[in-house]
Length: 128
Image (cartoon, rainbow, N blue to C red):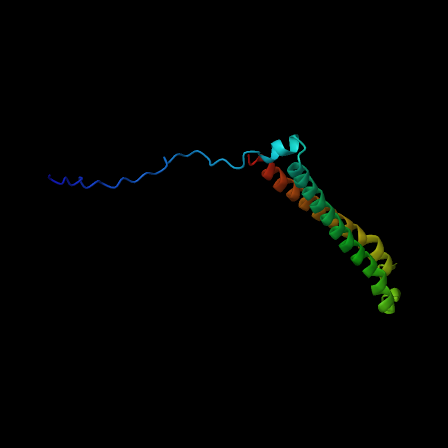
């Protein structure tokens, strides 16, 4: 009996085809989860609501701190009460003209940040 030696086999590399196709994410995209009102969809919406609420509280808190700071400034430095600019008392200028730019600045900050939050949420939903 002759012993047969098996031929030396060549190694073969098996790879996945290289395509430009996007890798698919989860089997249930976020938009579908939201449409079906599942627990995951409710979690995403609750997260958006929490981030918007947090933003509103931070902006309102900062606004109140600065707004309360004006009377405190006037109480700490009573000499400001006697100062005048073009016959108008400085406290009136601070309260009359100083508050409006503050309100506008807080509004702009809030709108830009809220839009950014919503854009991020929309990007998350669109990533099917």
